[in-house]
Image 1: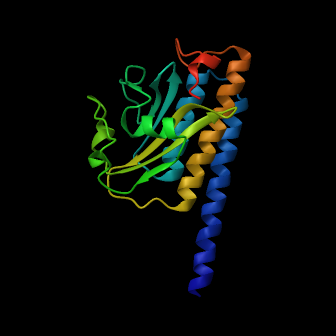
Image 2: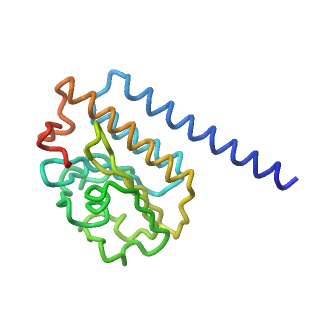
Length: 191
């Protein structure tokens, strides 16, 4: 009976992942501004991953700029970090997923930003956003309390990052700036 319950939970989680991917995919084809789509995606990630926040950074030259956040923050657009700063910069530079289950703010790579309450959150999961084999951003999810990230959560965030990368590549082909001055030209994408 325990095995059946476990399989039912796995099936439920797989169905949730599929619904998230479908909803992100549908956002990609809607007649919405790129900023609205990015904001909707971070809101969906919070809902489906049951996390306390989701932050989406995009590469602008040699920096990462906070472009979408849930919950919304007035700091969006003004938080900038270099590619060699913080956990987010490490993810962009290394092109690797990063999962920290507790006390992420004590990690030596961590960088504190004034005005971001997420800086005091315990758990941190981050994936690079990749388009055409280049890092174009980073997507982070955070939990206020310690949280052991599952393989399913890691795969979910990685896949959403890939979907966002495709969206940004499409926007670039259409000549749509990601946000304000952030135009995804080849020079603004990290190798």
